[in-house]
Figure 1: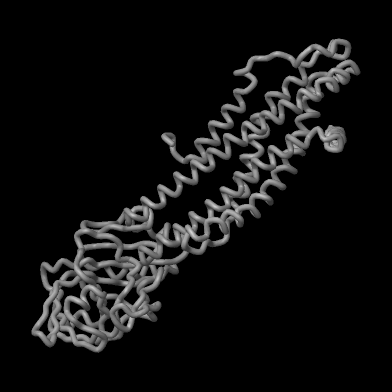
Figure 2: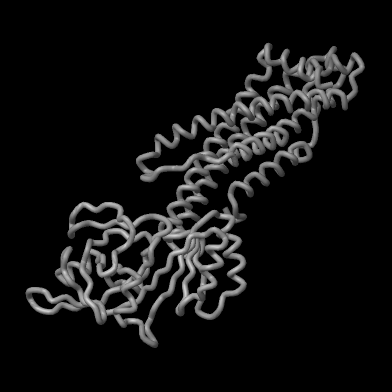
Length: 418
């Protein structure tokens, strides 16, 4: 059976009977694969950027110190851990025009911070910045440009922080996990966590945010997150790129909706192209099927022959379409490189599998209904060429295609409303 289907496929290919159907399916799979590869790279890049904006893969936030065993358990699972403490306080500087004081948001960080992304510092206000190496050394601080202007300080100046004085070592220009917080509008001061006890600023009733930053393999982070979520107590919460930062979540949701709409358009156009090409193919094979019926071919035999031929054609078109789509997504990336303003990681193999599955579903969902007419062709067509194709129920014939298209739309959209 397969050998005969293969011979029929080769004959139709040489005669040009399959060119339109092959082209329609290949273009459909290529379009879906190109969008899929590009969307996959954009999603990975957005996820990577969201982790950098959080400063970690998982952020543990509390209004009291985290137990030491939490950090120990995270390290035992192979996760990297960094600790920060953030609180508001007054800082002062003896400027030339008198003593200056300013309410600042003080952030004490431990070695290893940040776990994702990097700090950027500059030697002076309005000077060119560069990625920072490590954190402020003991006895030094980094202040942002707003605090430097308010206190009239520069690199080398001395600032009073609580009961001690610390030297300004650099101007802080970028802090990846600062984010947008309308309840924290004060300028920022970054200091070493080891200097915090000497300041005497942490007293009973102080508004201190105790944070543990965790980073590692996705699977390890998620397992630790699931285990710790059941043991959270009052005042403790976990933040991830998906639920911890509203601006990140909004950007991810909008990007996914846009890419979902692009995928929907490709699916609809692909369904129309495959359906029209399959109908034309069936109409050109009615005479051949009538002759085979006269020679004794039963309906099930004709159906199996053409289904086998369709499966081979689909496999070839899917392979070619995925390859073209993979190459085409580089063109799409080059076209939109200026708009992205960020590097994209390599795509995964998931879009290739999705493109193949979507291509085969479209092929059998919209090519099989017309193909079913071949098994019902009358033997009288050999003598009466004016007989048209067998008439059948439109809804019954294309119900499979409509169901396949509806399922693909829901899959690519990701939500029922869209």
